[in-house]
Image (tube, rainbow, N blue to C red; front, side, top):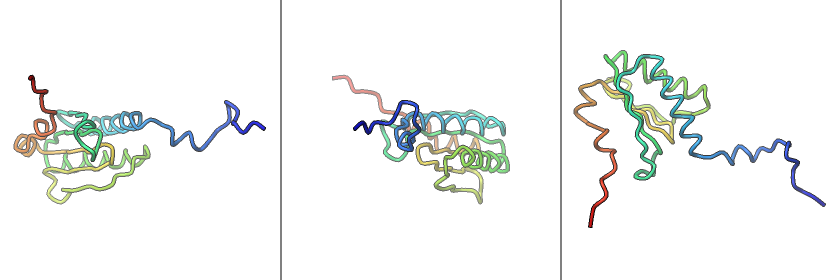
Amino acid sequence: MNLEPSPGASNSHDLAMTSPNNDVHACLQVVRDALEDVKAKEIVELDVSSISNVADAIVIASGTSTRHVKSLADNVAEEARKAGFRPIGMEGERDAEWILIDLGIVVVHVMLPTARKFYDLESLWRTAPESVN
């Protein structure tokens, strides 16, 4: 007796077989589009999958004012929800100088330029150069 499904049969296990890498790329596209829709400045995407067990990618973007930063963060969270990426949490909304949106596989930092320059997350998350022996 053949228990294999036919090639055209739909199977709920197919959802579990999707590549995590595809999920990261899809999430990054949603984040990128959401940030661009509200005119974010200096969007940077960093692949941290080899140096972090918390997230696979980090996105850093700047806003021009606290109101703009809040608007960017709200749009990212809303568009992520619509696309099926449930935000785990948001931090920093009250002051809105630096808002972090945790989407699990992607962490988004939306910052005022002064905070971005001071904390320099791009340098912190760059991988260390390989040592030459």
